[in-house]
Length: 512
Image (cartoon, rainbow, N blue to C red; front, side, top):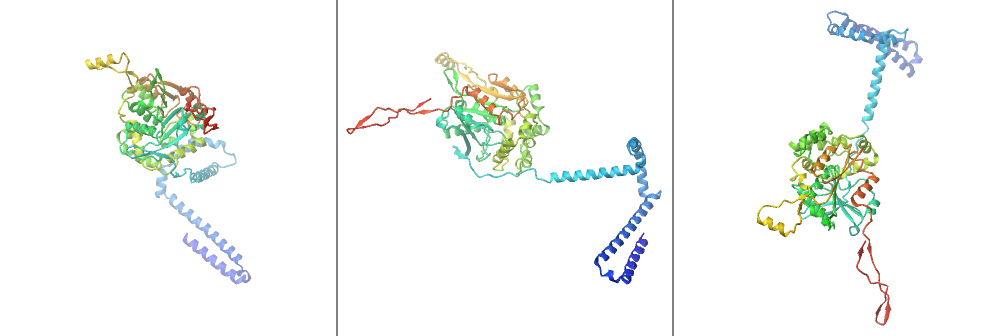
């Protein structure tokens, strides 16, 4: 083969020399030289291909060659496969050789797969994930007795005109910006509601707590309410894992949440798919199975890590919502969602809300608050849900207890949460399954259950004007608007210094 190539090179040189001798005028033409050069390269390429063919024939033609020995082992299986696929030959054109046709088909398939892979790589090269934005500090903050600051947000009517005050602790991977997503200001005005949301310690613009638990969370809520001018009773609203902090408020600060006036409760708690400890020892096997079967394997694994090896969760958090990039809630939190929930999270309105809420939640870039929140979900709360059940206080034994019972003049003393508890639960919820609220209702039979057919975890609470109206109507009845401060003016003239002066005398303000 080498000899053949050398001969071809010699012929090319001689041809060039002959051309220089006989075509003197054309040698000076650059186009002519290019054409001759291309012809020579093509002739050499043909000879090179022939040489490669000879090498292949020599390698495969000999019985003892390496390629022949190894390919011979595949001859049997290949013949079986070809025999099974031979019926495809019937669909080939009659004037085409099967070997030629199949070679063309294989070439087209390889080319198609190559084009598809190039297109896929092109689509994947487009950055789908946006980077998290850092927004300027904008929250109002109050100072707690221990020197920490809590950031909060206020919506609805002013404090002096509020008929009802609602405090909302946010859920996992959220912030004060969430509140009740999509709630209209006009609806708050119609019912006279002042809505207060705040960042949990370490979230958003709130300072972290050195060793927080659910009791410290309830005390923070009480101090926060007093600091923002909620001097009377307020309502607490817990959604999803934010329900943990609502349960804590019912346990540790019940005097701020409910009071009895003329045998009627004047305040209560509202829960929406509230989270409870999935390892609660009071759960039956059926309740526990109904909860865990709705969760993905990864979510079960995350709960296991939170309970046994909580520090390992930092690795997963750094790869998801603490990575500095946006993502999907179902991917980050390993959620299994129903059709309606999935349709909602794909909505641009929800996506915009979710991204801004996450940006505020992870503002500090610290994994510790999220780790603490995850551990609170699966650890001992310091109390049981059964402790919130309204029941008569048992009298102790002895003369002192007997005297107290006589002095109370037959008035019964109660323990537990005195006000009513309203719980809304979507029956297609796979984040907080219905079995979890069934357990709550079994332990707290006095809770008012509102089961929502076909609703998921998000669909009833997020961006639903009619749902929000139904919620407030259930809690507060007919809307009465905010409190109005009416000023009465006395038209009678006031005499002074010999001149009649008409001055308005202001009476005490009356609240309607």
